[in-house]
Length: 249
Image (cartoon, rainbow, N blue to C red; front, side, top):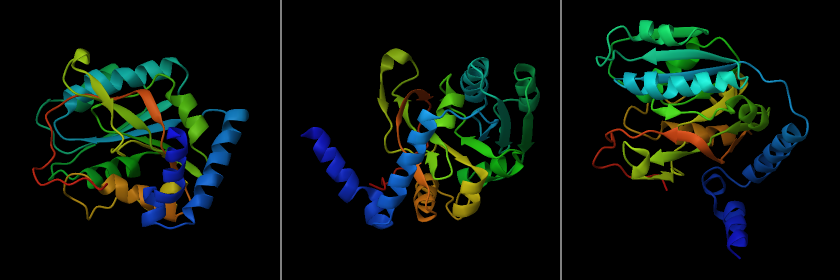
């Protein structure tokens, strides 16, 4: 009964039906079929451009995200980095510190400006050189099988918006939960972004730019697939959420 209720919610009441329209049923069906095809006929892995923007998250980037990317590379993922810094003051010589640890391709820029996630991340995306992107925050650690996951879930008709684990405190024993409300991690192609647009730079407050892109993907006929990913982890830090923040759903 529980699974039937979930299916009914997905078919009839999910956000894409209410906010975009019933044509999203076809988009979901086509996306699921393309992902199923990828599972049956594994494609050769493409180079992944990991794009991130940051302001004073240097320690997280160096000690959390970067080691996880190195672990994914050991499992065969071909990874290049595009980092857009927004004038961080928590680490002197951030680019040099990254290059000491990362011997792969790196494009780095630092611009002292008021931080807005959409603007900063768009800069990281624009300076990337490839056609397959994984967009994530600097406080994430990625799964070691990142390459295989993107080969499975990203196709002409599907992007991947994974549900990460959210740490409730600075230590693993503090507990965690799946952060189903967050859509800040996105794997997609350059074509997906050309069809749906980049992050909306008119959104300068905390949050919302990722959900805005989520629904524009649907309007462009691309299914943003949501799956739980155990080894995609958001690491704890003091909240930036404003006091008047209201969730979209």
